[in-house]
Amino acid sequence: MIDKTRENTPHPSPLASGPTPEGGVRLQKIIAGSGLASRRKAEMLIASGRVTVNGKIVTELGTKVDPGRDHVKVDGKHLEGAQPFVYLVLNKPKNVMSTLDDPGGRPTVKDFLHGVSVRVFPVGRLDFDSEGLMLMTNNGDLAQALLHPRYHVPKTYLIKVKQVLTDAQILQLQQGVQLEDGMTSPAIVKKVKKAAQNSWLEVTIREGRKHQVRRMLEAVGHPVIKLTRIRMGPLALGDLGPGEFRFLTDREANALRELVEQRIEMEQTGQSPSARPQRPKRGAGWAKPDVVRKVRRASVKKTRGARS
Ligand code: URA
Image (cartoon, rainbow, N blue to C red):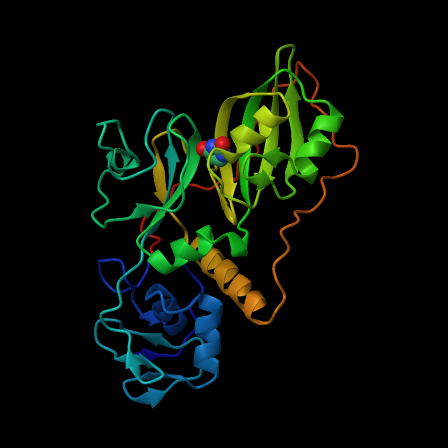
């Protein structure tokens, strides 16, 4: 069945179990869902005549197919058998290991994935006493690319530190601090809130050294009291409570894949992605002590089934 009407409403992933949406699934979504390419790249593959459905070249992007019946090939190869990829974001609570197993018997992130039957693994680490956004997936290539230091995926942490940093100390973090394993790359540092004894900052880094943020703050004399990862590349923790998880939306999964593809393309064409984050806005200051500023949270509702 091939139907060329355009689809305007979101569908569940073609590769999620369950009935095929009425009218079929867009070809680019099926290709992206197989993990072969991002949605954008899938569209390019279709437009350039590299995709066939039941033996016929299809170049129209709105084409819908029935993944259960139609035979889709890219460059002459079947998509069948491609493993459906699953992506989810967990808000790792404090005092939980960010691994799947712990020989010491401590709780791990796996304990929070109730009802997830696919074996997903964490992309990167958070310290035992850190909390926040953990991306988990069974897409090994994507995970590896996201973790690769060359691709510089920015990660943002909301941290509570002892005392209040001076502007000179903030500048030091922004420019790089000397740690025992070398200078850190420039960071983005935003003042969030200060109180009499503590202050809160948002720190964005593009490296992933062990205990890096804690060590950076220690180096400027302000030990971290609490650390929460709130963003990773295009993903935001949003309003997920500790221990809660949600599947990524199709848009988020595509944004991740596109980010990685862009970085790889840039590298291949010699335009190395800059390790230097943008400068913070001029005049950004501390919030008034009595203002309880909420962490900016993307209002992402819990979405199920967005596995692509
Ligand atoms: N940096 C740290 O120091 N700890 C974390 O858990 C993450 C980043």
